[in-house]
Length: 337
Image 1 (cartoon, rainbow, N blue to C red):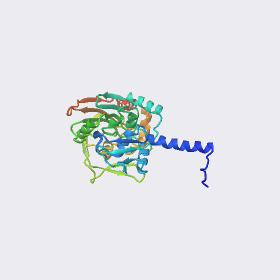
Image 2 (image 1 turned 90 degrees about the vertical axis):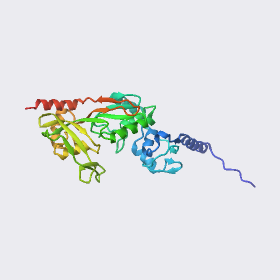
Image 3 (image 1 turned 120 degrees about the vertical axis):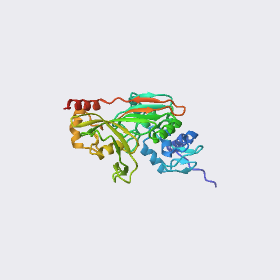
Image 4 (image 1 turned 120 degrees about the horizontal axis):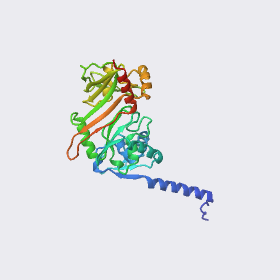
């Protein structure tokens, strides 16, 4: 005698349907993204940061490690380079809340000092990271991408330390990104000028520092650089703008672009930048921070001069110093003898 199939009660039916709906919903939200020619050669982690708007970098690395991301059906590493026509499996991930993203975007939009169809330049505030990572869910670039209809095209042209303020370039298309980064590597095409306030009396004769810099990582994971004969070539120009109150106000032009280059070179000649918690005099900085009403690194990327390159127009921008910077300069002027 043939047995009849087991009967499911209503609760079991609802549970089965719920599981099926969940699986179907997940499958529908998995995306298969074809790599466009403009993104050929890009790292997988950078590609995913554009595709997954507002998702922390740590989360992106985790889904790559777990194999949730596939390139042409195979696992990849964060450093894997993509080719035009590759198919990337992008899993469904919830991004951070829209309200928070919009608030951050509104604040950043107020810092835009130049924009055309190919570039955005902002006056980055001190204390704001340019990208997420190391416990930071969203930096400048993630915030712009999370709120832009052209998110896949936005790229950082260069970086500024989290504690450094001033001019930061964001390219709107990959072609201009490559043009600008190539110009930056050429060292003499794009002119970058910084302002710094350092401890002590900077000698006027010390107009140039040529000291190789080596980048190290401590056991804690902290990134630090130092002058070392085994390091990479690093050159910086300095000129004195003002002195007073035991401090010197400098115009600084980095010729090369090593990690923490200006900060390391100032420390190398025992004239660290005011407010530098990594390379400076923290005990002495405490008193100055009361004058500034802010404990910040007194290093500011003041201006950029970009000449016309290929069919892209040139531009020149200047980022105003913030109130804390201005207060210290006023203190210096009052302290002149």
